[in-house]
Length: 106
Image 1: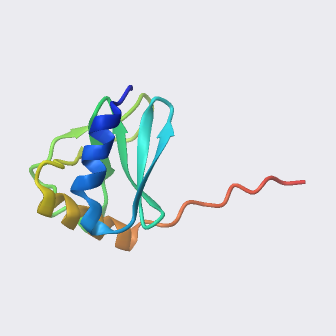
Image 2: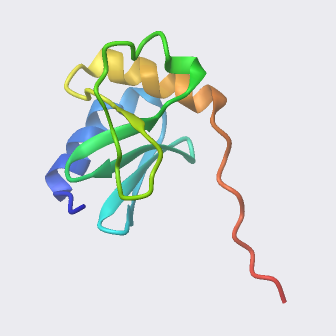
């Protein structure tokens, strides 16, 4: 599941027009957040996005895959097409929830 930092920086730059982008290392891969919502999972230098009704029509010809063992199937996002990637990411940012707070119970 290893990713190169160069690829993460490439993904981030390609979707920068979609909002505020930040990345967080997770289990050998990365989660890419846009406007504080987790939008892209990157594993083995492959960017995955959740299969969601909001992007279904845009992703009809997209490849699919599993970002990690036990994961649900995701779309593989072609980030080399900047305008397309930004359009998909913006659509997901509109509908995906913010991550739940991880406050510890006392």
